Image 1 (cartoon, rainbow, N blue to C red):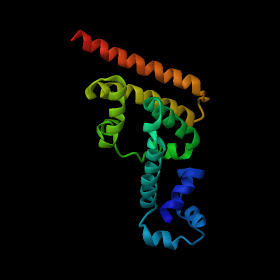
Image 2 (cartoon, rainbow, N blue to C red; image 1 turned 135 degrees about the vertical axis):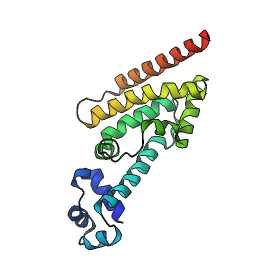
Image 3 (cartoon, rainbow, N blue to C red; image 1 turned 180 degrees about the vertical axis):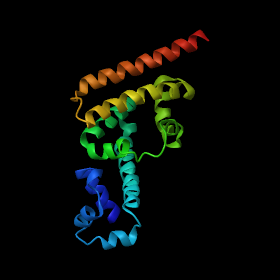
Length: 181
């Protein structure tokens, strides 16, 4: 209950507004139950981060296989998450709580379905897909960050065009290199 309340508070007001007092108000209780179950507010933030990460993964991956172009849809969902769930996006990716590295993210087993979708669409090898994924992810994440920080106005058609052009250019470059081998 405490973790869900912390998640809801962060989602609505941002992680900077999470403290024992605001969380106790969210719960309709004193701070005592929070401090009984958690030694510090950092522990609460960590658990709320895990919940936000699960929510983000579900947001991105739910029914993705039903999409006509799952790769484009994945990128658009990531960007839309930054718009629709701005506080969660900022918490997940710009609050210093992300404990991993982007490299580790690309090697995570959870990425396998995404790589398989890439392979299915391009008939490329997984090692090639991994080379494509970093620049593509960088562009998607950069776009999402700009939107979450109100530095860009979202235009879905322009975004689709940009992601498609980038993806096709990267695939073309890798295929060209393979043909030269």
